[in-house]
Structures are given as C-alpha cells and as structure tokens.
Figure (tube, rainbow, N blue to C red):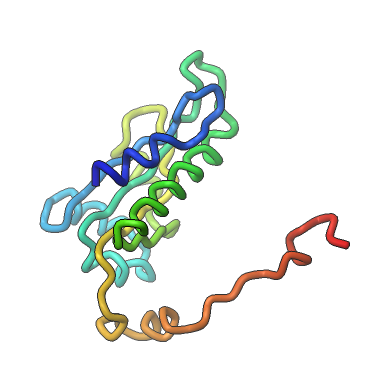
Length: 154
C-alpha cells in the first residue's frame, strides 16, 4: 500500500499543493466496516471481498486560504497514478463514486471534501460476482470514439 500511495504523491498539482488525502481501511477492521456501510448498494459487491477500501479526499483551499478550484482535478490525477501503480503490481482498483459523501465528510477533518472510494485487492474470478455484476464484468469494454469527445474533430 505504501508504494501505491507513494505513486499518488508524484502527481502534478497547482502550485505543488498536493491537495489529495487518503484514508485506508483494511478488510477485517472496524474502519473497513464503516467505509463499507457508506457504499451505495450497487457498489457493495465490489467492496465485500476487497483487501482495502480507500477514501480519496481533497482539500478545498490552498494553504494560503484561497479557494482551490482545481483540487478535484489534481486529486483525480493522483488517483489515476495510484491506480496505474496498483495495476503494475497486479492489484485491482475499482473506483466508486456511489457512496454517502455526507457521512464521509463528517469522518474527514474540516476543510476536506470526499472525492471517491476505491476498492483495492488482488483480482479474483468473475464467477464469484453475483448477477448482474458478473455479466457487466465480462462485457466488452466500450469507449466513445474520438469524434464524440474531440470538440474540433475534422
């Protein structure tokens, strides 16, 4: 986990403020149960066998006190580096936006905003997933074509 979180620390950020903060809850701990309880029903299957749940959050202001309007962007970039590092180590990461953000915010120190919850662990067989999650996991991945998101496509 240290190596994975260290990767996040190398992400770019405005004025090198590094606004991301993480809380790690390992399976079998009371904190894991708390984090799990915040997850939306559709995210519960991804979390129940995870080795860890990680709450990603970000500061809302620069150290100077000025609002940090790009903090979510910078935290997202750190989350991507975290995910890439984990993947390079054979650890799966399942990001989940569906969780009780108000509960998470009450857990966090003042001035932090919850961003996303990450289920992390070594991948297992898809047969262990209940439906409809098994089918979704086996479905081909699709993405929009470039001309759907490139604003000046020619």
